Image (cartoon, rainbow, N blue to C red; front, top):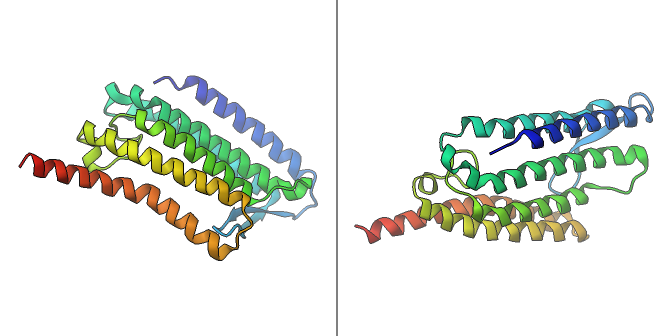
Length: 220
């Protein structure tokens, strides 16, 4: 899998984010703090000086680019990596989009933009739907996809698990996107987000074990 173009685009994007961070920080009074984290209810639970807060997404963008770029060089199952390229690209681009969104939301109060953490939930939902759509195209590997002992060692189980997991992730993504538009109270929003996040990870893992167990009984 070729990653050079995506890596270059990631580094250019990170440089633009650094420039944006300095531009915004120069427009706010000294000592201004901006949000760096929000809880599941959309409430700010961490702040930092403006420049540090705005540079954080840029730094994470660089780290993500390096990690994704390293995967093709350290993946033991090289012959199957190309099959998982669509998932890897979708995840890479999706996470970059999330970092841009985080920086925009952080900068919003300083620029008078009407943006809030609900936008992040909408974008996250969209990213999950795109990744979920690409999941069934992946093939067994150690760094991309739903990796359990049963999926990695059995291609049939991998395919079946990723078909189900992809549909589930698309459903969770759609729910998250809709939640971003609904004026729900935290008491109603938080359980849905937690259930969706846990379910999209645990249910496919349990399903892969069930498929393996059923196959083992069939061949016993």
